[in-house]
Amino acid sequence: MKRRQAIQKGMLATGGLMLLRKSTTAETIQPKTNTAGFPLVISTWAPNVKANAAAWEILSKGGRALDAVEAGVRIPEADPEDSSVGYGGLPDRDGHVTLDACIMDEKGNCGSVMFLRHIMHPISVARLVMEKTPHVVLVGEGALQFALKNGFKKENLLTPESEKIWRNWLKKSQYDPMETLRHMKKPEDKRSKGGMDNHDTIGMLAIDQNGNLSGACTTSGMAFKMHGRVGDSPIIGAGLFVDNEVGAATSTGVGEEVIRICGSHTIVEAMRYGKSPQEACKIGVERMLKLRKDNIKDLQIGFLAVNKAGEIGAFSLRPGFTYAFRMGDGQDVVSEAESLLKN
Ligand code: GLY
Image (cartoon, rainbow, N blue to C red):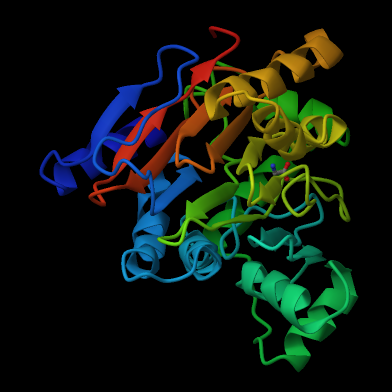
């Protein structure tokens, strides 16, 4: 419900410039105003039009896709009202906000931080891991020390609102994380059709004016997760994958399920072998359902993909997965992905 309102508000705020359209079939969505299909930016979840606007600032001036995706996802990371990314993210069961993020460019360079605390912009730390270290991943205390040495500020990321929600959850706390997920993501959950308001990672993909691709993915992960839990978002190949010859993909939803099928890499490989971005996203969701059957029927997973030509695709397990994009003339478009299950 909250998301639906956000979409409608967005439409009003832009005087109707923003379109809400439903992906109807497994067709690829074609860019309308620019035959090349780029620049282009696309993000998981409709409210991330704000993140796309920040990315577009860079893309529309001829900037690099890598700079655009970093700047874009920093918007929800700093937003205290976004309860699943960065500052204001819901904590783990012990009350700690722990963040996961990764970034990947057109040359196969990538960087990731996992289980990072106290730093508002994990995506920028991930970029520094990529650019300043011989490694791809830094975790926990090591990632924090690296960030502090590179000038990042130590901050309290638990907002009073998130703390209140966590304290309320504690009253009935369930130790099994999957049980917790099932409890929180029932279809009848009033907060959103897909029951995912507590779990909306931003994954962002962009193509710049030179036709180069990059992606970024950042999250506070599953609310009330076990301390130390890491999801798909910072795992290259699971939450994000970019291959500049083919395309890029990213995911949102229950990370454990995405990791099991190496989701984003699977989708990029499907595009490599001729599938459209939309078909490739559907293949990812179908594989997951085949593998996990009844285990995932109450959960939500969504994928976004772009190919080298600037065509986009989106597909989810259940209804309610929205996404936002800008291409061509820079108009905001929000849409709801087609889903495999119908409720
Ligand atoms: N997709 C985000 C997570 O599972 O942490």
